[in-house]
Amino acid sequence: MQLINEGIEKMKGYGIYQVTIPLPFWNDNVHCYLARREGKWTIIDTAMNRNETRLAWEAAFNKYSIEPLRDVERILITHHHPDHFEYARELQQQTGANVFLSEKEQAVAQNNLDAESFSRFYLTAGMPQKLVKQLQPVNTSANRFPKNVCIIETNRLYPIGELLFEAIQMPGHSDGHICFYNSEEQILLSGDHLTRETIPYISYHGYGNKNPLSMYLETLKTMQLMEISLVLPGHGPIFMDAQERINELLHHYEERIGFVLEKITGEMSAYQVSNTLVPIGSSVLEKWIALGETNAYLSYLVAKGEIREYKDGLQNKYVRL
Image (cartoon, rainbow, N blue to C red; front, side, top):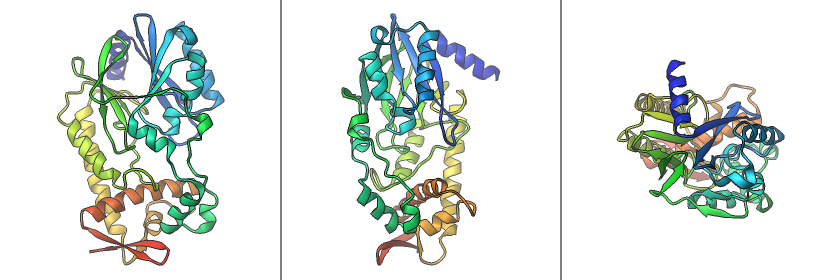
């Protein structure tokens, strides 16, 4: 706790403040950030489009005496997932600020699967049709997408609080995920790429890079070369032991890869493999989460030559080599 408090005080010393907003699902909340520089403010991530989010931002603006339309000059988004991006349009309307999102994230956010492709993908993965019908396509509709979206340019420096942070593309959790890094103070705004108490969700749901796990592991290894003294994540506590956590995650995924490989017995669909990873009686949402993770692991194992993918009627099947 003392280290966390030290990290919070260090963060505040540079004009960076955490805004914690409740979520309706498993992570409980998401951390967004406000950063003050010469009387102007930058927002990093926005949370979901819910009434609870609106109230949380109103409280934060009041706490720091922020007049949104006058004081907020930009909105930076680490990645396009709803718990980080969905409220961006509403905050843009309140502030008049441009929203910044990486080029890859913009493409993915606006080109998710349509309803027909969505159903076809999960049926091909072996999910029963009655369950597929209970799922809803994940789409960022045109009327929810911010009007003025600028591109976050990687390797460029962005003012966040009293410091300059380099925008670094760290794919895996999403194709164009951005982390912001200040090399002088060794501070990392990590989004969902690096978290202390939760395992970053690496998945494939039919769009974007088909082998996100390979990308994620490569970026973790890249982070081993970085000097990081403080991590400001999108979920869970801030922390200072970044290299220890990176090593823990690399070990976790190595074990998880082996675990998934062991679950492939005979010829199996992705859905059949995923069912071995969740308890009996799991909800449709839990099954969808597990299937996305399983797809990522299966793609990784195919690329490594550990398993073979082939077509069996309408379904894709996998078998160990």
